[in-house]
Image 1 (tube, rainbow, N blue to C red):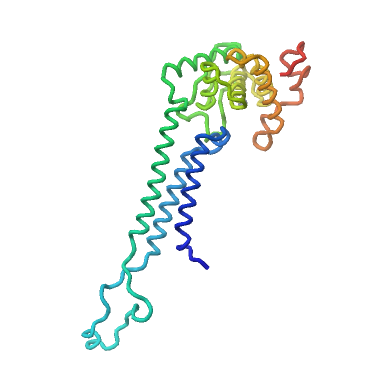
Image 2 (cartoon, helix red, strand yellow):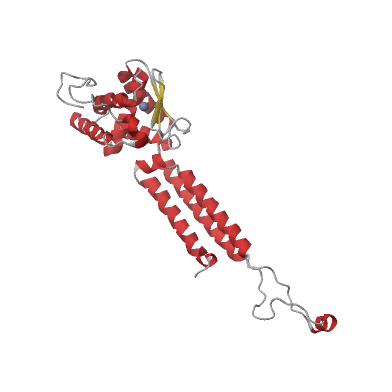
Amino acid sequence: MQRLADLLPALQTALRVALVVFVLAWIFGPYELRSAVPVWLAFLIALGLELNFFVGALARAPAPAPDRGPQAIDRERYGYVYWPYESDETPRDRDLWTPVRRLLVGLGVIGTLALVFWLVESRTGWDSLPVETRAEAQDRFSEEASRIAAKRVRIRCDESGEYVGAVQHADGVAAVGGDLAYLTPERCLDLYRLAFDGEARGSQTARALAVLAHEAWHLRGVRDEGTTECYALQSGVDLGRRLGLSEEAARQMMRQQLAENAGRSGAAAEYLVPPECRDGGSLDLAPASTRFP
Ligand SMILES: [Zn+2]
């Protein structure tokens, strides 16, 4: 059987590969990953494991041995002298360099990855937009939310991550009947791309529209999550159209969101739309129309 110490280099390599794969997936992969796991957690775990490997390797390093064995004069003076290395073991210098070298490589990988992450995020994320552009975009989102809320409300993009985001597992937050809602920077970026660059990104854009409309309905005074989502998916059609989609594309997106809503379960079941959320149902905002949403 192999000893753990012999497996250590392979373990450390696997850990580093896993970290690289995770961070790249986080940057370029689906939005779901971003919203589920904060990226700093991966860095923190990797750092903790590297330090743990290092401390473990130090503890297992061979003990320092005297630089000489018993000499003739010792034997003469003391007779038999116990010498642990006399039979089959030879004295070795305590090997400190290998664990230190491994730790440095590990820290190098983590540091490089953090730098790449920071560079990519600062050039492509919501934070990479000029302050004036962000202010202009938030004004636009506020204007759209005000239409849905039927009163003057404000939308802010939560750049600090203080109100919404990975830790809270939410894309937006609003006080029922209030006048201020926060969206995650990722959702703000999707809305910005649509409204200012005419760029639609499938379900990602659809979700961003639904989230903005959802928070606007909370501000209007609707508390129940399922009802709020039902209204949001209907308002999302007009919202998407005003932000630059064709009516058909906007409708298609909200129908897709409604279809996906049926798959919600567990903790997300609260957001399931009620059975009355259908054409002609009591939650149909346009009963005269046969289109839904
Ligand atoms: Zn809600």
